[in-house]
Image (cartoon, rainbow, N blue to C red):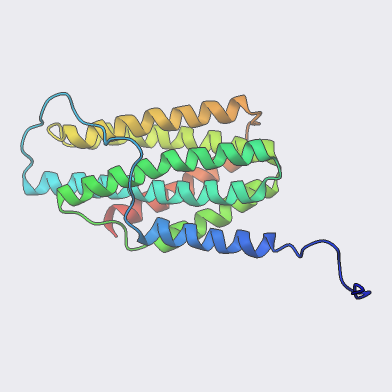
Length: 221
């Protein structure tokens, strides 16, 4: 049987559609699914003091903010992995996202223990972060890595402030935040080693402003 003149000898590729569907699936799972960690949830060496109702509310609000940060991290890494043509860098972004999934699971678990809930605006946080990640990725791999470094530095600072704000007796939340902070430092270091460039001060300032809006809203909603 002869091959039609307009037929191709190569299979039709649907990479764009496949990547879109995978991105939608990742978004839905991040925002709506219950997450399972690959690592055990960090635990304090000793049991903390009992928390009163007000302390629980404050801890839950702070852990909700941390959970939102991890939702945003999933979106950023997913979009940056999509935007790079470097297989090694794509794998690095995906590995970091897997570690961030542990953070999602840990903060969700702690929120339940505190009687709290996740942010009602998580779909918005994810969508906005995904768009920002695509912008960073389209600026080139070195700039995209620079965005990772600056993001993780700001998250490290943010987590340090939470260590100061969490009730003294909430050792369980402190153990989780401490491990999250260590992981974020490692992600920043890996991005630097992969060739990140320093971002302009105006970009860093804009990132801080956006983060301030997110953390303020997530503390309440």
